[in-house]
Amino acid sequence: MDVGGVAAPVVAVVGVVGTLLSALLTQRAADRGRRREQERAEEVLERSWHAQELRACYVALNTAARQYLAALTDQLHALGRDEDLRAVRQRLIEARDQYREVYAEAQLQVPECVLELAGQLSHDLGAVYGMVRRLDDGVSRAEDSPSAVREGIEILWARLRRIRAEMRAELGVSRADCGR
Image (cartoon, rainbow, N blue to C red):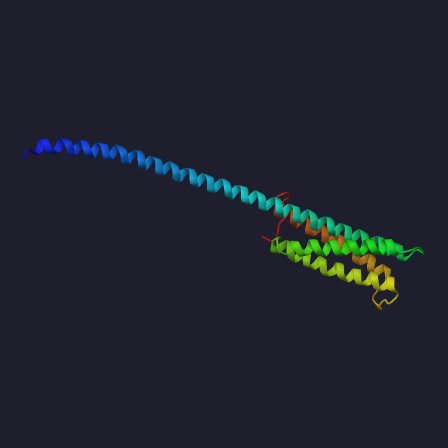
């Protein structure tokens, strides 16, 4: 058998197979590249969605806390006047309920550095609320007074500013440090 006669078809087959494999490998590489690019795009989209959700949570938390503090202030001012307190009292109850709902949602979404501050704020809001309600109901304790409530509200506004700075830092809106 002639080696040259067999070599030519073998070389031809190897050449054809090589060409076909080259096209197949190129196609597979392109497919992998497209999959990686799609995965990256999905990750970017997911991070964007998460950032929007976190921002919405922060806005709701900030708004609810501000409304709660404003309602506490209104209730304090109303205590010193002889007028029907039902509307002011109802607004305070609604603001408190709204804050509690938003805070409960935030507990599942916000980073630990913000959650710790929000937890302190929530606790202290409850303490000031208790003082205001006891003063309103006429069953105040020795430490309950309008000046103590006023001081507590001022401290709470300062805490809210601190939380807002942390939230802005987490969103990348400001340069505030979030404990890192």
